[in-house]
Image (tube, rainbow, N blue to C red; front, side, top):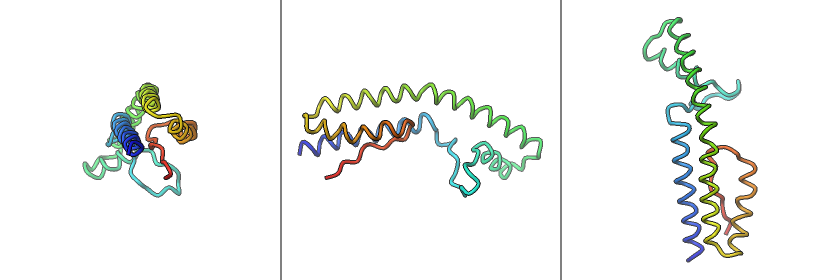
Length: 134
């Protein structure tokens, strides 16, 4: 039962941190939509200009200016993301250490092995909590 509670707490903390960081950093309105990836990743600024053009019937001059505005704002958002990522990572590490302190030595070993490979491999937001095999 204690093992179940520990995993439940870990899962809830991971979910809460993941959801809050996702909404704070990326924001719902700046995510590019799914698209055909055969031409590579799509610039989100172009997508937003296309939507504005369709909705507001922008002329070519307005489209060019809107694209410029979106690109500048996207760069500003990227700068903010670069500044806040270390803060979120610090909170995640603090949480991980707190959870680890709750565990006995056997649990710590399992916890460490499930976190170790994920931490080095995914240095960005949106990390999922570790999956534990039964």
